[in-house]
Image (cartoon, rainbow, N blue to C red; front, side, top):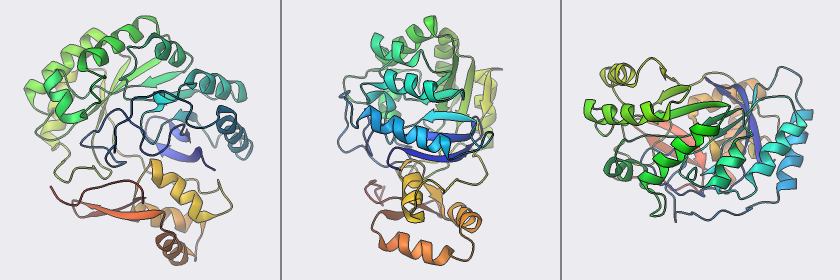
Amino acid sequence: MNYVFGPVPSRRLGQSLGIDPVPLKTCNWNCVYCQLGRSRPMVNERKDYFPPEDILAEVDKALAAHKPGEIDWITFVGSGETTLYASFGRLIRGAKALTDLPVAVITNGALLYLPEVRAELSAADAVLPSLDAGNPQLYRKINRPHPEVTFKRLRDGLLAFREDYQGKLWVEVMLVRVLNDTEAALTEIAAALQRIQPDEVHILQPTRPPVETWVQPPDDEGLLRARAILGDIATIVHPASGSFDLSGNESLVDTVVGIITRHPMREEELLETLEHWSPGDVAATLSELEKSGQAQNVERHGVRFWSASPAFFPTKK
């Protein structure tokens, strides 16, 4: 499949069937921690990158291929920023017409200042935007946004969306050691969250391959500090464990590529998944994956990951 992948295990969304409406890596941010590589160039144009009917046809096919209980959520999560897809509202409504499963949208939230984007996302059952900084300077340092998506627009968009949105608003805060896990940085983020009033705050860590080699996750003290300052609605979200569904294509290699394009996998994680879906054929699949030219190895802090070959990861600081 070209646009649908998984289900993949998620701490928050159980077994999540992913829908990706944009090409790798179509994004208006260039975050230092991004697991999909650098945005080259950054993109801030909303358009239908693929025909919406093709995307929804794949969703229908994936739903038909799974038994009740095998999928918990339908999740829009892009190879970049999901809301850059112009007909996003049509995709959400189309997915909800196909199933009673709840629909989530993972977004950086940078375009929520646009009334049309807020209207489109209002149909989702849960929206998960990002807020990694409480001031413009740190926002530029961590998220490295397109010039048009300023900190003020991010903050004002989140505030405006909260006013009318009836679903679950779960704000994600990605912590990077030294950058935004300090008391001063967390206090500013907490002040912004106090105004936004999300239903939950999810504290994340860059456990998958961060694009910049110097990015480190917070230590235990940083996590405890974040939990204390961000308040009772904040939860530390640890990496999910579980098997990835590799049944989406006739070709096992194509299915793996479909997942690692949006969700790079630790090598041990990939080996475990292949053992589950293709026991006895793991070495052959890895060899075919390497020879296909569609995948690459990325090493960060002594851990080896598999990612899509077009993703750009620098090797030096």
